[in-house]
Image (cartoon, rainbow over all chains, first blue to last red; front, top):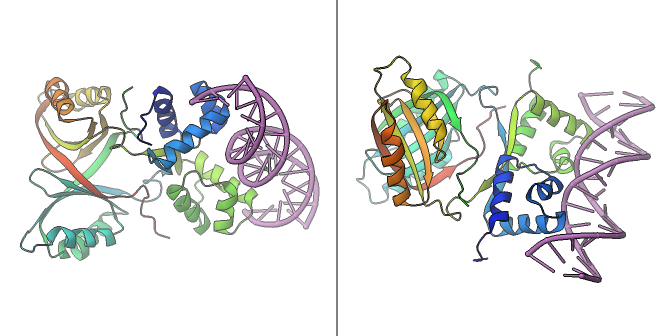
Length: 156
Length: 156
DNA sequence: ACTGAAAGCGAAATGCC
DNA sequence: GGCATTTCGCTTTCAGT
């Protein structure tokens, strides 16, 4: 499956990113094919990994997750497996939903969801600051999110 | 629909976050109900907004989006509608997929997807740095993403 | 609110162009 | 690589409890 994608495939990707539960019938009408080849294309995109998975998007605030933050973390590289130690700890903290290895002053950027400020303090005190290889960290509290596309910018 | 959610609803939210295309039949088996009331619960979660939408997750790298960054932006508040000016510009830049209003040294944190470094330079030169209210900005290039849960941490 | 059954419809497989 | 058809299974509805 090194074969490249054509315009129709990109349309499918766009439509399924926008609505992951779109039926194959509707999808086929949107892209101008009949259902059978449409389904075949979708399956190919799935098995070849262009489509990784499907997810429901929930309203975090309605569900009580009132605090969302990014945390910039600097590590103390005094051990030779510093990064692995850090990642192992991060993986065990379920409030951390994203972990990016980045360039710049910080080494890692984390995204965190918790219910309230008290829970955030507990996270910081009991978990983040207790990770041995963490040198410094700095919270960016999210006050509002004005743009969050579930769709990746594709050309074609 | 101010009525609170019960344990079964949370199970549904968890399962549909993990697999947004799970069939109603399978979902009903997982939560231990028959299909009819399961579907009814899902519909209620949808209309009441706990479930906002469904999306396919694509592999950005396979699709050629080799550069992912976060950009911290500081604004110059010399106009009284500085923030609105900024947000209007951001909304027109399709490479920016997320825009968060945050506390800390930066005012905003942006997430950006582009194909390569050349495209990134163009984005910076032609778009970001041309926004009149932007005072300073600083790129955090994402080298790798070691954790990215499509699922929000729910208690119950 | 859940159950069970019945009807309608989309998904998947097959053969053909 | 796409189309048409048919079979099968899921979704959805509705009466019942």
